[in-house]
Amino acid sequence: MNMDIGSDEMTLFRDMARRAFEQEISPHFEQWEEDHLVPRELWRTLGEAGLLCPDVDEAYGGAGTSPHVTLALIEELSAMGFGGIASGYGIHSNIVAPYIIHHGTEAQKQQWLPRMVSGDAVGALAMTEPGAGSDVQAIRTNAVRDGDEWILNGSKIFITNGIHADLVIVAAITDPGKGAKGTSLFLVDALLPGFEKSKKIEKIGQHSSDTAQLFFQDVRLPADALLGEENRGFVIMMQELPRERLGIAAQAVAAAEGALALTVDYVQERKAFGQAIGAFQNTRFKLADVKTEIALNRALYEQCADEYARGELTADKAAMLKLAACEMQCSTVDECLQLFGGYGYTSEYPISRFYTDARIQRTSPSCKGGASQSDVKVRAWRSSPSKRARSLVDT
Image (cartoon, rainbow, N blue to C red; front, side, top):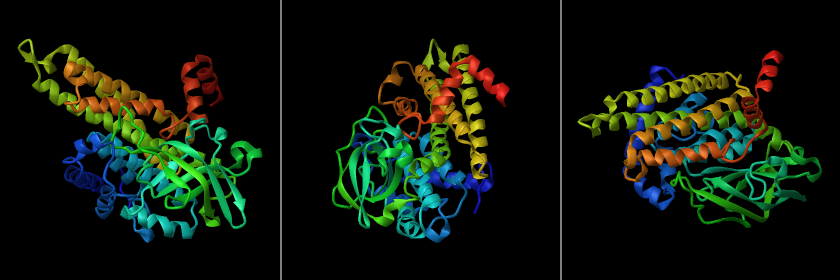
């Protein structure tokens, strides 16, 4: 099964997904935002509807679609204003599942992928640490061999899906003398003794996305918990960055589109000085600018999604996409909120949630926490005319 972004089959699938989200999420979303947590049962509901991890192979319970379908589901959630749920969904379906698909053993795939597809297991990725952010070269969580087991100690912070997680991919140092080259990844079952979760971390946005700090105290892991080769964790994380950035860009572009749609409706209804504010020339100019920025970023995003599906997307291009899309999301949503006037600053109007949900996109340059080398290079390139000139000559 292979659905391209613009295919009729994809359009029908998006319509089906949107109806499912309207039925299962919309009536309860305000309460979940107040609770700062979605119910655990939502994951099973989405699994029963076939909406989790659709590009997992049919042998493990998935639909075997292209990655476009997973990205489309992230888009729909984001455009509908469910930013927190989109983040949790993206971690589960667009990051954790592909890690296992690409680097897991057959036994690991059999153990976890069917449960992730059904929603019986929720996935999380744990790289960020209190003292290191997402600087993988500075992490202190470590795993030490003890016979046929590993003993895991350390802590992680700002972990999306941390409260509900049943499976956490944990980055840990296994060879302290090698720096980042001594990092390994482990599939950690949340039921193991010594694994503890903090209470929810309260945030200014994306309230329905549960975020937690995780603690590992002498957690004994079986030898087969190692994901990929020992001391190859950093390499694996770098290999998976393009997909992660695509997911974040999908959120950014679709959320901006959702904010624009809300704003267009509002300015057509809101009256000032005897006419709809959408009739004012300034309003039209502002909305034209917003629409243009969104269209440009969507074009780049769809190009990158196609390249990823063909195995051609580079880490640097994915970083450029993510940087551009997230900057665009924040600036365009800000412009949209401005057109709501004082009402935009109230929680009564959904545009305010689009605004607060967007801010994390610029705070975390890579996968909801920390900058990678590619992100840093892109920012340096943008800030230095001489570097831009040299890079053009080099190519």
